Image (tube, rainbow, N blue to C red; front, side, top):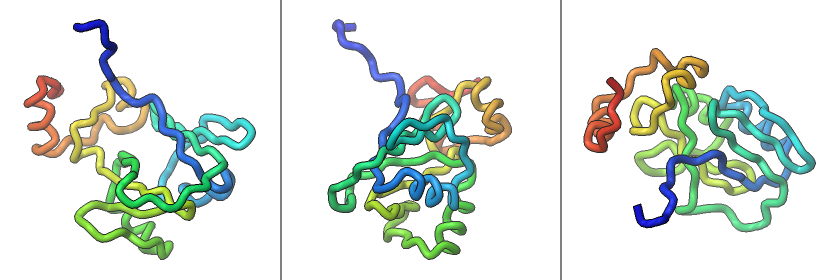
Length: 148
């Protein structure tokens, strides 16, 4: 190693919204989550060993290419909930939408990506019985990261 630190994951993403209470209500329509905590102008949404920070103060225009991906245990359930709520699903092969503040969100199914949770965390989150797709397993094998 050359004295540089290796990236090993994301602890959290801070997402700017107009109003934290409105953002919590909006995201609660599509995702089951636990609130980790709050501070003035912020809320912290638990995702196992990671979290999403919602922060008041969004002032910029809506995002086009810039986005963040949320990993879920049932992507199609999110699609149905978005459709039922009348939220526009953006064109393309992915499941992308914008929240009321213009943040572009990509929804990704846990089964289909190389991202994995440690066994104890997966068990605590109820993901221990979720099987990865063959494509995701192949990506993990190519990196020497496939589970036993």
